[in-house]
Length: 365
Image 1 (spheres, one colour):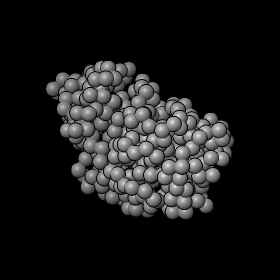
Image 2 (cartoon, rainbow, N blue to C red; image 1 turned 90 degrees about the vertical axis):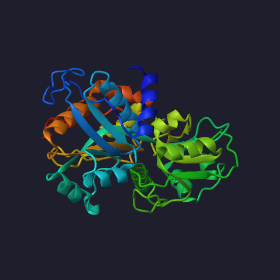
Image 3 (cartoon, one colour; image 1 turned 90 degrees about the horizontal axis):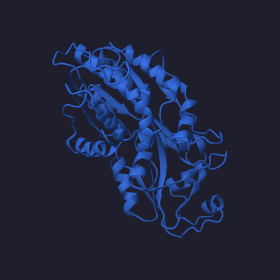
Image 4 (cartoon, rainbow, N blue to C red; image 1 turned 60 degrees about the vertical axis):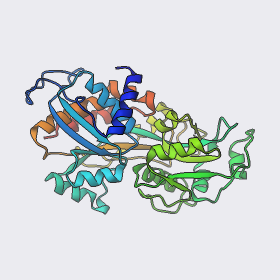
């Protein structure tokens, strides 16, 4: 399937909130897994529903589309309502798995609620590495460098104009307009918000004192979902937001270079992948919750990265759904699919992380 066709399909999926006949293959016998997607991947018949992170929307739709090239005997639907909504729907038993830009939080009761729903522990499986871009619309400015302190100042409202001395100092030789800065933020509960505020608190603790959270606590004008803030910046000269790189690319927005202390770093798949490659697994067993170092000063490492997890029951789904879930998630985590996601604004999972994910998927029962 061509990228153009997949993009058209993605629009259809986002509009209808479902995918018909795209995800598991084989014969009409639900026990049959003889058809292969690629390599050792196999398909199974049935239906899966999922909901959550809008950050991974473009990625999971691409994976569903490529899986559907060879698989036709099942339906997979994904509704990009946001991480908070996805977790709530998962713990309520309304969807088979959830997409979330933050792992289940034990302090908020999410781990216990998920275990109660599943009748067993739920696992956080990192599937998509999504760099968060500080995206801007500033006519005449093709290159912009921001430090964490400047970013925190912009998003708290202490820096209000583009020619502020702090921004000018970080961008020598760049002619900056005196326009007022318009900030757009996610008004819905968002894992992207939580990860971005984790970055601000870790890298600029004096300028950003608030605790990281899915609900925005800074300044600005709220818009729903990633598409909302990206569209706000696209339509508003002098504006800025935090949004997944894929949305910045789709809307042709400016993307700031970030200087955490090791020099300005341009956002690329490689520089974002560096941040994921040094993340620590802090979950136990096949629960692959990662801890990122947002304050890293390592040269060539883009520090503002989120990892989207597929939150799954380690056991508890019926056999048909488990077979389909394993087949699809194995496809999603495969090297070929992960490499292809870089073209649409994601960073491939490092090989060692991908191997752990494959092991966990195989262990689903």
